Length: 184
Ligand SMILES: Nc1ncnc2c1ncn2[C@@H]1O[C@H](COP(=O)(O)OP(=O)(O)OP(=O)(O)O)[C@@H](O)[C@H]1O
Ligand SMILES: [Mg+2]
Image (cartoon, rainbow, N blue to C red; front, side, top):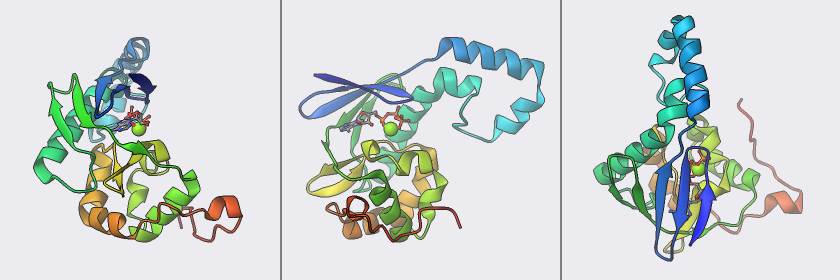
């Protein structure tokens, strides 16, 4: 068994499955809560955000929310691009299929995804620019980290990503990256 650490979850990896357990940043959560109570307008600002960094909600419950969103999105859609989330204990613990890591530079990943999704991945750059959030399952790219902000683009482009994504893409190390990776 290996232990990996994401920002929101601790992940225990086994041969066929991984177990995702929420991380709780208690000190940050309390500090953010005090700040939000002192400045109630912050509540309004954050109210419509599901995972805004640096709030009491994300510090305390970010991992739980991610786990819950992953399980409910997978069970609702069963999209082929999603690493299957088999089970969730109310978000306190998720069991997901283990995938093989992909070996690709982050710019080759993001560059291709921007092209394939017609910039749809701008909805969640934190997730889509990180190769660790992807894996290979049955020879195709799959995603292991799919919070709410990724759902629209995965619904619209999940199949196309699996069809068009070139896992051997190596523009970055060859020094001839040509795709636009900045917001325009
Ligand atoms: N199904 C899986 N198969 C293989 N490895 C996985 C799987 N799920 C997660 N991992 C590994 O564990 C790490 C953390 O998992 P994940 O990205 O889901 O957590 P997170 O806290 O949401 O991450 P982030 O820091 O991107 O917010 C991943 O980057 C990946 O390396
Ligand atoms: Mg991640």
